[in-house]
Image (cartoon, rainbow, N blue to C red; front, side, top):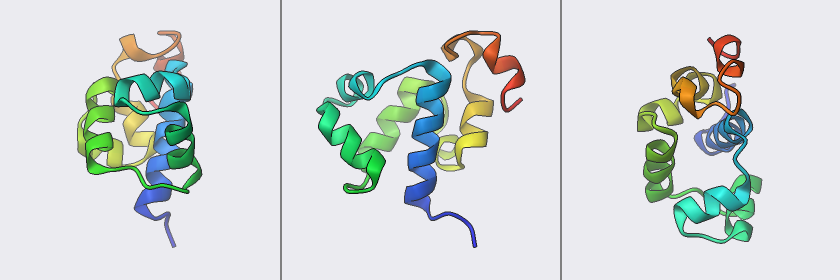
Length: 94
């Protein structure tokens, strides 16, 4: 059995944060939330909202459906300029 959508989204956000070097504090600013609220979403205590998903997709410059498709797809479609080290994106998930 595969992952549920919420768990998949948490893993995807974690993968994108790692790929870009973003912290929970950065995402908190982007989403207009606190770092604690981001932590609660990432730990599964609170669910990500549809608004969160839409804002995150825009921030990472990927389609919402690519964000929801899981970490591999999200990282594959992440623009090279968004990778922490541009060369890191060329071999990771591509």
